[in-house]
Amino acid sequence: MGSDTYRWLAKYYDHLFDLHTPFEAARQRIVEPLMHRVESACDLCCGTGTLAVQFASRGIRAFAVDLSPDMCRLARKKARQAGVTVRVLQADMRDFRLPQPVDLVTCEFDALNHVPRAKDLGRVLKCVARALRPGGHFAFDVNNRLAFERVWFSTWFLERDPVVMVMRGGHVRGSDRAWTNVEWFVREGKCWKRHHEHVEEVCWTAAEMRAALAQAGFDRIRAWDAAPFFNDALTRPGNRTFWRARKAPP
Ligand SMILES: C[S@@+](CC[C@H](N)C(=O)[O-])C[C@H]1O[C@@H](n2cnc3c(N)ncnc32)[C@H](O)[C@@H]1O
View 1 (cartoon, helix red, strand yellow):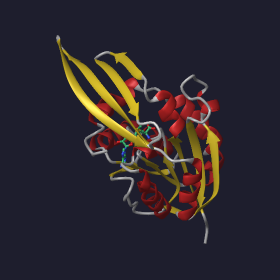
View 2 (cartoon, helix red, strand yellow):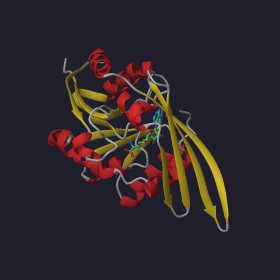
View 3 (cartoon, protein in one colour):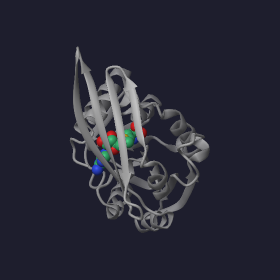
């Protein structure tokens, strides 16, 4: 993804997507048990900054990283409006670097799947490990190939004034890639303006994920199927996995 890909998605992200409940339920189960020892945290691929602002509101030293300048701007604005401090860094998840190590890194809503190539996973995990203090945790979720096969061919339509968004997904069977073409129709007075965005995702098997985490120095690797947290027809068992791993102490 280029740094300008999430332009319209950034602008209307909070307006259109309200998927936070299942992610909150998963976080409650997977991340909350660690929180009593978390003094600093970074939300990687932070989007509009909702989670980083939540961290900061709990008194946690909060960092947020995103490649999209528009997302970074919105995250800074959200922090300002909430009256909290979040250090927002515009950077690629494959080579980001925090000014100091943190206790927790999160990366939600299949953001990790957005790396350009599946083989970039190791680079991201290396950066996450560098960002964590020994004993710190990385919590994230990914779409699996089953999601690409089962739901990616659909067309989604979302309408919430002043935007209409049509998402058309695709996937080459047997491959680790999928894409979404997003057509935007934005009402400006009596006219509608059309914009186009293209977002791609890659995926990994559970075995590849475990091996890459171990290779990057993580232990206590645990996985949860997302279906019970979502409880909807889209997120069938196998489609999405929540992962948590610890940066192994020396
Ligand atoms: C599906 S959104 C998830 C946003 C947020 N985590 C949430 O839960 O709402 C994916 C995010 O990943 C960011 N992103 C995509 N590729 C990236 C990269 N290579 N490095 C950093 N951020 C990236 C996008 O700008 C976008 O904000």
